[in-house]
Length: 358
Image 1: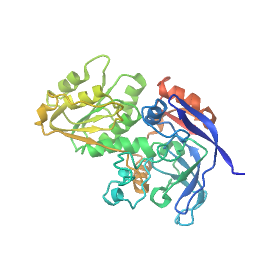
Image 2: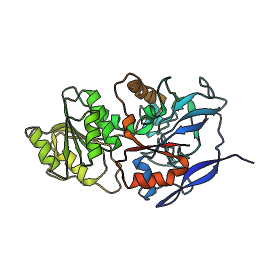
Image 3: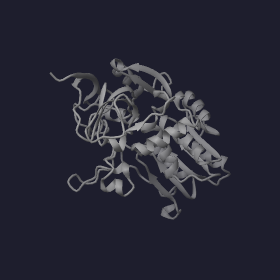
Image 4: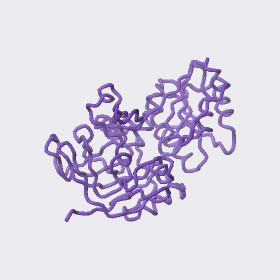
């Protein structure tokens, strides 16, 4: 009889439940990971609400930290019992997108058409990490050994949140001395703020209203935090920049209102770096876009993955350039996953990220 494991499974919009599932089989190029820590992402909440479609019966989750349980026969350079992480985006390493330098966009094919989320497989197109075990495909492109001395919680943000937030700063091409605005200080926005600081921004203006997130924003690099319930953030950003506007605005929430505000605070020639996952069509206001004549750039990013990206992110942590462990505000066992979803989806009790341990 096949061995069973506990897994958080999408049943229908509004229901992700803990069920028994068969421990995955692995192929020659795969690895089986025993999960030691994972977490819940805002994208998982989009799935829960039915705003992002996935197959019924799919195991959710895409932020794995664990130990190698078993290796496929073609996987070399690793050993059973080794601590690893794998990115939420797990590229094959040999697709057209990968060979074009866009590993996050792996998964496109003539048969399936354009799939801009194609590189995101865990908890999207294959079973994910909110379980006791996880199959990692194309393991040699995706398994990143955790350096000795780093805890699970120190590297828990690497597979998605840290990689995504940093990508917002990188795609925005922040330069030394830039002024940057970051709209929303949830986990991704906080990592974008931290990434902006590492990229050399001299003034970082964060926009948020939740007190715990305001304090965390200051802790990770924000010089000023605007409470949008107390003042209009566009007016305040323009006041703080003496009417000049910001070099880069990072949108980290996924709403029309924050997208529009990010565009309105840009200087002529500025860049809007969009990280939000949008559930509805966006519109671009004519005046904020300067009728298309403002030399603006609008860039988007999908969380970079693969083992080299993970190695670099863990290097940043190991060298004490940043500490993201304070983002873990709550701890739950996998058996409590439904309770954890209720807390996270409703953003109660100052929650930022939840460490889930099988």
